[in-house]
Length: 360
Image (cartoon, rainbow, N blue to C red; front, side, top):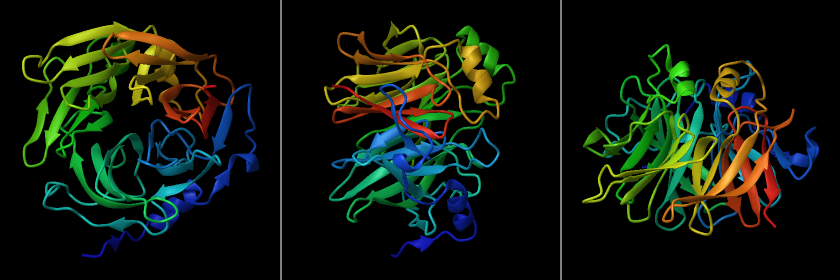
């Protein structure tokens, strides 16, 4: 079956995203101190490496400046340039109705807003890309990502619409096609900001499997559940508890289900990514929750709060500092760190660039 193309808004959205390759050297955002920048990607709150390549997929959330549209960006981690991955001028659909039959259809391209990301390796050159979408619906959008060509390409294959009142942030897949998703708060609760600032429980983790639907993960109720990863054997879930300023290890396997270990971090833990050493890279804002929320809810084109990156030894339950930055007028409010060789790439929930620095 051939993929069909999404028509209508695709070209408009790609144009608003700036559907062109943009090298950092061509933009007015030169390096500041030890930080270099990949210029152009807007609000890239999460980053993930394409397996077996030097490519990065970056999310793009709508918000901030009025003209900012959401989408997915493709980053060359070697040459430090970006291009549009989705929706480009030729977005394609190959709906897997057998797995995602409850999905109401492809996303609204004019509203698409990508936040949390993850990838599950498949066979050959194909992987499955999981994307948290806030545009038009609260959902996980699924894409088949192929690396056969010189640049990776994606085809939309389905979606999973989240339960009512949830606000998904991050997703992590299981090998069997299931997944776990964090919900940061009830988006129908007018007092969610105050509860997050106070460290009150606002969110949880939901587990989903094809033809089974959602279940609430026992012991996952925390303050501002954000980043999430799972152990290779699927027996442990690792959660960023933003409002608690903590990293949480939650048992999933037989005999350990609901067992919870909380590791205080001292900063607003946002996203988690596996590092090359088998430890989790923990990134977040080193600021007051109310300050970060105020900027997130504003129309500011950039948020500039200080930020921090640690490494989390999930067995010893210890954190080791990697970097602590004050933030500046050009970049701040970091949300994710992704190690690519000797470089650490850093995303933000509000800004017009992705930062990177050397780990040497």
